[in-house]
Image (cartoon, rainbow, N blue to C red):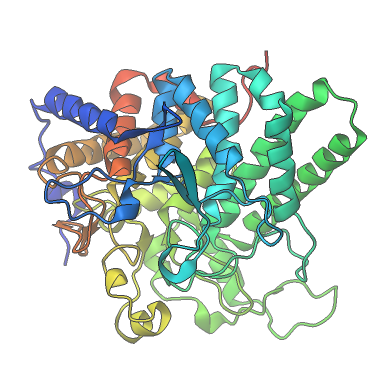
Length: 485
């Protein structure tokens, strides 16, 4: 049985090497930056290991991996690289009929030409959805921080937004406002039974639509386009419907689970909507009782007809805080849940990507016996240090938005973040900035983990910056407009 979190971390004393570690991480980060058309365009996924064993595509520029990179560059005021990254990604937006509007998963410059991957070279040939949804978010954060209004209102950017919205908001057989995707279509990019409407994709869709609205509102000032007005109204309505849907069907507390367990089933007709997805009480896992305690709450991983996924996904829940999808009281309920379950979610190497992991026959059936997703490894309950900065951002942004709310709870969250920061500072340099960690406590470097992983390095730098350098920079992560010039 795992020791209590406080006992596990008694030996993690503040290190006198803090400055040395930060400087080394900054040097590693500078080495990850690569050029396109002669100018810095972003970071590779991982630095080449001295033994030269890295896979070739880890030297490509992945949109997903560059989210923390771009956030860090914006905080450093290095706007030129961010704009170049956005422009190159926009130039590579797909124009083919079937994938029109999709942004590339990754790109690389070869012999002076940019080569993009839309899934045709990936393992399992899966096209990532999150790359496309992240682009408008990063674009809006760049515009808001740099006040580059000309870029936001340019025909090129506005056309890219419309192409993406055409792809995302098109009519389908389903009447719900969520975006349906196959397995492996986001950060969890190997089979994990996350097909349907996975939380991370739906929260990113929410952030994407909010950002698109902000960018269209800027263009609307200088345009009398009736089509733009109509598209803005449609997007705002979809955004409203999506949030209402997620809060109704994904948000759970001890109270809502008790209601769910007693709802009728086999309902038919438009008026019978108490149990729209015909969820049987037997599918509610018993571990939820202790997980939720009395005052905790979180967004479940997926809602599918008769098959909700009650697993906790760290990135989707923390992004829901940053994007303002869940309310302030719900965010504090999420923080209470994290504190209550920190032995699972933080443990030795903060933080776990999802919980609980699939084991034994369930693992074999639902992952295709994928050896990388062995129980307590990789996406199946592995620990990813790159996720900590999202939680730090969510906590610090909540404090700035609601400075007088539940001082005791927020003090406990800050104390936990401090322990997690020191845990990473003491371990990551020794573990060569590994991609992920294995085991129930995340003690062991991942069996197939890449070393000198870019988002591990920059995730640590972001956590350090927000906790030590300039806490108010967390406002960068707020997609609500602070000033529109």
